Length: 277
Ligand SMILES: C[S@@+](CC[C@H](N)C(=O)[O-])C[C@H]1O[C@@H](n2cnc3c(N)ncnc32)[C@H](O)[C@@H]1O
View 1 (cartoon, rainbow, N blue to C red):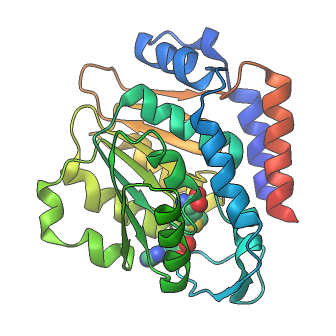
View 2 (cartoon, rainbow, N blue to C red):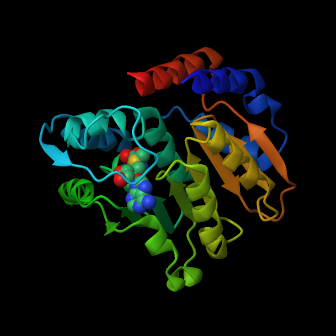
């Protein structure tokens, strides 16, 4: 845990807001998407989706695939506890929805469904085709019934990530947006990165969750930044955004996702605290 606090302090020290950014592409993204304060009507649906999980006290037996949980000691887990601890935060869910509004991706891939909190943020605008991957059958079943209840058009696939990504047909797919939120280990992250590279287009947006989760995830992030196909990256602490746009010079940004340094810091610490307890 010491690592997380140290890396967060380092992030606060190095990060800027939109004023420190000279790339028009990144400047517009920050101003028009990250800092968009509009109370979009979709946010209400995201809240309802989350609340319906938070009210669900049923227990499921979870099959652990990832880098393990820092919160749960047993595999029999209450759905409301998983929703509270394992998914995207309300603030990030809103940002993900704004990302979809801003970039208007047609095809989206999510690696790591869990209960579908992030999937709901990707699906709520109803403008994209979404494939989401989850290895744990029982968890996926809960997510699938949520998607039905909320009328979300989502293709939920129960599979080990690697099995799906190694499938040759992926080479003909073009995902405009990929959200990586599965196995938070260096080896797995770099493996998924390499396996999905054949699908990139110039406009593709990739979002890696938890790039500072551990020293080895930070190493994976540094390797991704250096990859010759990667041009622009944005580190917002929780997420690493990756762009492949050939017209951009290679440049790496460290940016806070809200205009207010104080608000961002308080929310960031609240998130870290949530990881601990
Ligand atoms: C952090 S959770 C995803 C959270 C979700 N994106 C959200 O915001 O609500 C990661 C999920 O990926 C699944 N997972 C991890 N490694 C996997 C693997 N190798 N194959 C399949 N599923 C995996 C876990 O079962 C877990 O439900």
